[in-house]
Length: 507
Image (tube, rainbow, N blue to C red; front, side, top):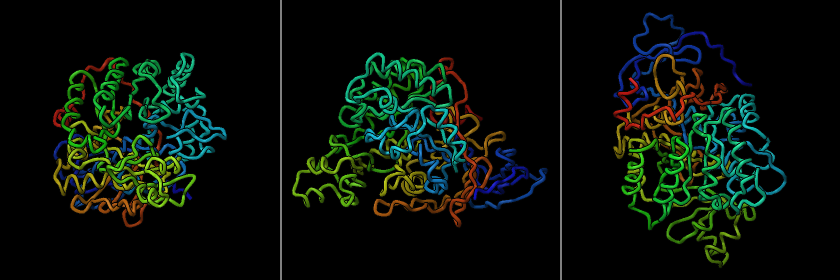
């Protein structure tokens, strides 16, 4: 049974070390919430207080925004959303990598890869984005949901053969579907050009579909055409689209994939920084040296371990390394991978030096890229945000805690145009996380990935207490659909700012 909370009384979180989400240094103060909003920051003695939460020795931050998820259907299917709330995540952006749950209707044919990462055929019942938005409202999710529209999903609905470039008529249909979704509240457009069912899409196809994004104040995010040797050209392709469409660009899970690519992070970051001199560009990153997706023949190699997480024809092989499966079957890695498909895999394809370098850049946001349908998911599904706070802030001192929180809150809200989110200030929504900066850490591992973090004490979503470490996710469902604030990027000359400048600009 869902707990109904009547928002009326004032709750004060007292004496916490408050990180306001702008990157500014923390201050020890009180924060008052009433209903779904923060009503006061500072001394609260003048308020009629109904409840006081003693938070001395703890840190209070805006609820974390996971900018890169595949929770499109999970937010309705997994009511508690413990994997997110236990990390302090209060908002998720879905529809990444070109795959989204809407606008899409499925028949009995096998789902195209990688749309099959989201769910089964029967789950794709949202002919329009409005249908999906209505389903979110009806489901009463535990976290806030902002949604992108996926390019591969549009191709699936418009085309019979996804291995071809779209015809002018098909491109026109996709553009119309995207525009309708944007008018109904979608945040923007995503592509996954590295995947088999989008590789045939030319730059011209993507440009045509994207032409009207700026009219809706929308954003463009992209899983690049390649993250291996040709990554700089792939980044340039994304930048060119952003300039042509006059919209912000987010490079999804920026990385140096493949052993031959290790050590290139400074070069890649420099390429990003050069583009930022002329347009609004940022990226997201997850704090792990392994990626996770469907089993892709183009990524099969003996350079690093490939762990199989699921296989439709051979479910008994899940939970093993591809090399061990190949040895058992007495086949090559490639032949074994073909035999396993469709399947999922974790690729241990990155170096920690590269991950640290990209993650530490001022305009890098944090995104988990977790796969909730995976029976043995990558630990990033449960561990991303506490891993940043524990490993990369406290243990390796890759950057300061205030900067880490900015990446997870204020920067994310700014880039995705989310009004009154990502900051602790009067009038902002009361998405909050109370945590212990000395003990916060990820518990999820590759061997045991479904483990709640330590040190996340309490989490509020829109003013309602939704998680307590001692009890886990509560039965309160306070999430809502997030739509854009309607600032048109065409009229906004401000380039993306590094944390120190952005902090000053938001005071």
